[in-house]
Image 1 (cartoon, rainbow, N blue to C red):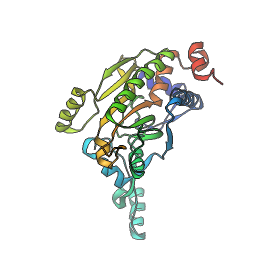
Image 2: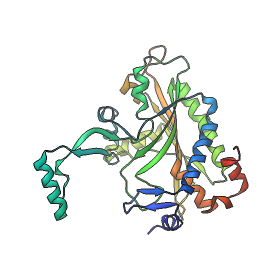
Image 3: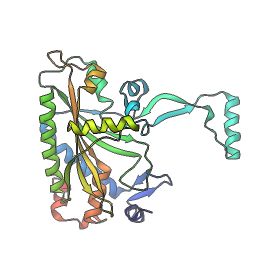
Image 4: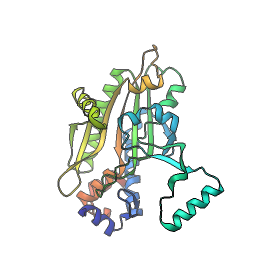
Length: 301
């Protein structure tokens, strides 16, 4: 059992589907998500970012090229579909009638679930040729999938991620990241949520992944803004500030104006987690939230 999850479901804010980490959302929940999304847009208005929106799936060849499976095979979600003939279809129906496994005729398609909002962006930018002198900033937003079923409502399998992605020189990326660490902290402070910034690493897979994670921390490549959301006091990463160095620039052949390999970085906002943080700390009725918080989210209208 999970106390926070049970409260949210009982209040009708989240709708259980019977699958861990897969929820429906109520109108009240979505109103908060929409307000947060609009707030992030206002915070980043001076970035003059190019807005790109993709569905929550990407091409399998591009996904394979991204090396996500090299680092996080345990989180990936592929899309399969029936690829058989009429005889195979009859076998599927018979399996369904018997309650047996019916997936033998399901084969992988050329579509993969998007693991992070920035992943479809890099090949698009690469196709355009060399970057302008000041690099590029992209605003991306997508549902994302990660296969980590859990009773913890802060660890959903399908969730929304808003990102600003910076592509350019190392100096441009590091300045961008530091700026957004400061902006992100001010944002969460304005929402009256307890928070802290800490060094972090991604959940790389296997024994080799532990070495990569240690290297990521040693190089100060990833920071997270943490908010206590669960009742046991555990801290949940709600914003992340990432410097990928030349990883994606090399993979996709992205070049700067002077033909050097581009570096990339991003700031990511977990919209469901931020929404859960607001409900956890300010109560289940947004009308009763502190007026200062309501003004930040809805007072501009």
